[in-house]
Length: 385
Image 1 (cartoon, rainbow, N blue to C red):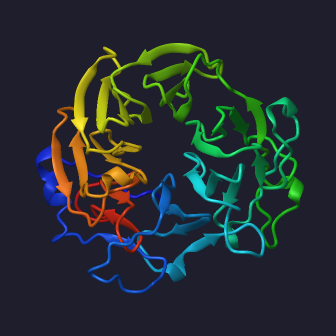
Image 2 (image 1 turned 90 degrees about the vertical axis):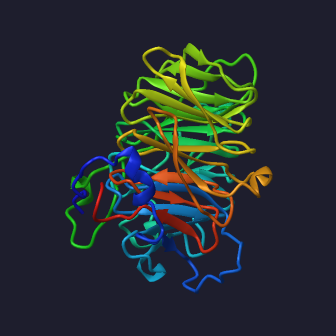
């Protein structure tokens, strides 16, 4: 599918109108297909959301299940449920993170408490995994060879993040073993289609692992993300500072220190001008990448900030609190203007917002935490981009 055309920018004074529920109703991606009782506050336990590079698909998980939607056809019958084998479920335990490749529309990676990293081609019924793991990694780290379509880390995996080039994936475990998986090489075909040419002529990939665990003096890593150029890693830590590491050497370059407790989430804006950091103190700091000073400090809520997402143009930011019981009474989806730090709108929600993801090409936000399932606000067609 060709990407939608990029339209005029969304002005700060037009944001409230653009997200007005009376003008554009939220899209609800409801797995049950049943009407949502108006009195219900029960929400599915979604733990991760990811858009494909063009926004033609959006994926999320509930426990160990992954479902891929066409957001413009919010009918569960039009979705793809990914599963590994005859039994339902994509993983053997709760999934912690899933993410589409930023360069390949149909390639999705997932990981979780079963210690597996899995790759999925969402074009295939069931999302049949079709990348292979490599055994060429040090057994001293506790890693073992993965079967076709998966890589075994040997312990619970907490996060994964794609390199901007879309060919390398960084995976972190609870014991801070960081592994880079290179998917550029292979010895099996990516997809076997009916009437396809010989397997030797098909594109091939291989999850080749390399240890990227940085030297640490204390604390642990909650999350890592790449800078836009892919030359540095931004690492949120239990001790608080966000560590800036060179990549691939993983040598420390700088610390971003502003939060009173642990930091959970860190992202660079698409324009590269700002880095957003969220932590246990309920604050979001917006760092200027020219001065390396905090331009704005945003108050999200009483609980922790575990998820952050910038709009595709870097103009706006939103946040989620993850499964935080302290946020049970903190309702509403806040959207901030990055340059001014102003909260331009706070959308009504039934429950606290847990996870968030801006559409990659439009001013629309997918979020979880409300009854019924994943919701998309802002509209996917017409008006602003």
